Length: 146
Image (cartoon, rainbow, N blue to C red; front, side, top):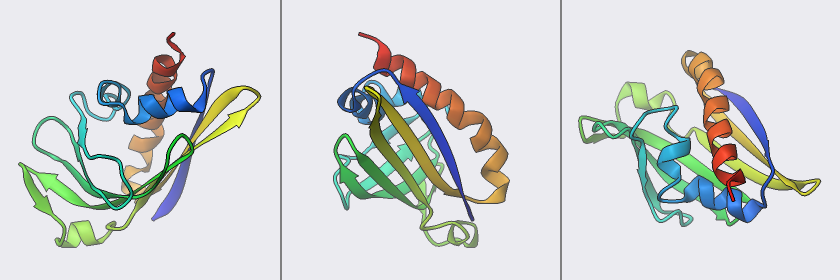
């Protein structure tokens, strides 16, 4: 697996960007480029389980590895959900289980820089390179709304 990095500069305070990232109403909006109807079930607390769904019975089983509000969020991906069934043990899952997705927010000249670092297999690189910029742009639009 290789690490990919994506960044966006948002004209809003970190607290507002953070609220967009984990907000119940805004999460499905900024993640729509990955899957229309996407959702998440978690309390975002360190150690908590997180189910990232596509709205069609598939998704990912993960855990919140770390959470420093308004600053850093780390997600460890553990498995897949297909047709509503969790898979943590198949050979396909074992190839990438433990992959990390980290979000860092920092102040840059009165704006917020959101950096996403992600472990991913080569087969996902093109998709992520195409989709993450769209998701970050949507998050930027949401956070910059008054």
